[in-house]
Amino acid sequence: LDDAGLAEAPVWPLSLAGPTEGPGLTIGRSGWRRVLLGLLTGDMLQRLLLGARPYERRPGEVQACFDKWAALSEAAVAAGDRRAFDRNVAGMTEEFASLDLAPPTKPKVGVVGEILINFHPEANNQAVALVEGEGGQAVLPELTDFFLYCLYDEVYRCDHLAGARLTKWLNSWLIGFIEKHRAPMRQALERHPRFGHLNAFDELRQAGASLVSLGNQSGEGWYLAADMALMLQKGVSNILCLQPFGCLPNHITGKGVVKELKRRFPEANLAAVDYDPGVSEVNQLNRIKLMMSVARTASDGVQLGPAELRRQVG
Image (cartoon, rainbow, N blue to C red; front, side, top):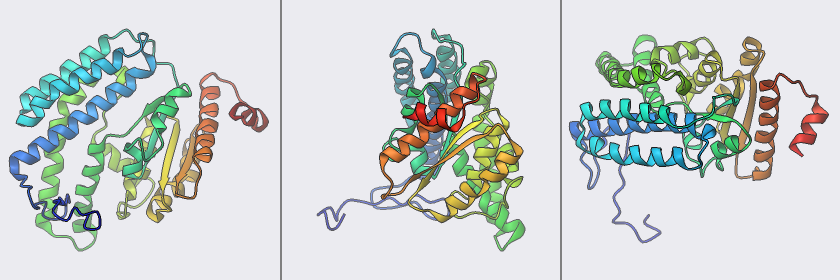
């Protein structure tokens, strides 16, 4: 910013481990409430959008519904109004479910990886759009789970390493507080199974602990392995693991658990895609297309050999 002549621009540090105050920014209790409601609203809208868009019969109808509820939710989030949030969660789920949608028969494809590349379409070269264009239904994890993972790290440190008891108590309380706010989301989704099940954080933690130590806390740590294991347990047998810039922790708990996941889930169709500066977009595209070819044929109950797969990817 200094080099660009923007030395006066404030930089806001956001950290669960330290202060978040900065020039021009004071969050406070009410601010954190708005942050939480905004995070949960985004997770819910993302889930409904991805669960409905591949099956819309009238193009643009799902996006219009998404835009409507995103606008309606702004007031509730800005006011930190939990009751309005609860009403909006129920209302948006019912409206998405009432749209004219085809039966959910397309292969589900989990998209996991380093947190920025996982959720930022420009960083992952529109991976979700590519999955949908290839005839699949993309499934993204909840961003809230990543922050719960960060909070739980301090709990583990206190129990097994050298963490502080007060920090453990505070973080455990925060995890329970956030989970209580997610209860209306679970209730709304239970009425409409086509949009999937919202896992409890304990389910995610147990899935991770079955593969790696919860002491893996660098980068995405055990959270990445847990994402893949939980998706496979819930029937999402196709998974794209997005790897950034030669990130060592991501490769260890991403690529490193693939062999064990395939042993436990023989039907698993897993593909790791590198997003290093030296990797061409064509290579990324081909790997995703190959994975989608396997996903489609498995969905149809057809087994293709390597030569036929290469021909389809073309």
